[in-house]
Image 1: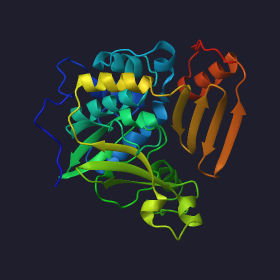
Image 2: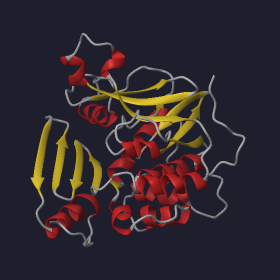
Image 3: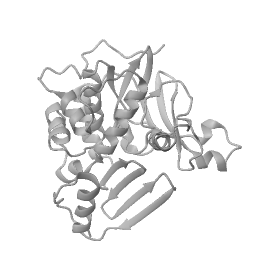
Length: 310
């Protein structure tokens, strides 16, 4: 059986007197007495996190790379109440899980791999938890490329997008949590490769329906190739620098809402509605429009993002 390497100091063993749990739950507007007793509890927190805290790479693209510290992450996301990019989001979620008594470790993408959804996924940082002697990938940094629930390593059972299922269950308690009828649904799994490497993969429902003759492996597309090697602050800083120089030249914010997701780019807003499979696209031609969408849909502030829209 694979295991989480415990022979190094866990990066979550910080010494500062942070009140991560209180700040985290307050930011998500969850009960301060929230407990984690099941994997479903973690899933609900993942969904709440992605509905309150957007994926946001504007800071790293506009202001450049800054050292990754616990202080910087807490200040930006929990105190100043902005979103951030994947590394910050997953470290923060891991800190919370650690405080809740979960056996959690950071893991990283494999540099130089070609098994990815985009080249920046080589430098992705994520979380692995040990739950009842089984390992699960728990990620809140993929934006919407996620089932929003823990994904067991090596168990190739496909998992639906739980944000869709969660909404369906709210509307009809008799719906099965693995309902596959939504055409906008995407299936996920983590497959073990050779040499203790793993591959996080996705498969859209429509792809399976349109190409039924293909094998399951052929229908899946790679997202994130990783192993369980130790992650240090030096690794995180190196990966963050590489991430910021890896061809990510588009500002993007991603945030869930109850029935779908918002995707804000420099030149357009895309709204995906999972209830009716509707996709709404709005062009953005000036800075005021960008700021308006950003403040209305993502932060509910009057912040001005100083950007140039050509």
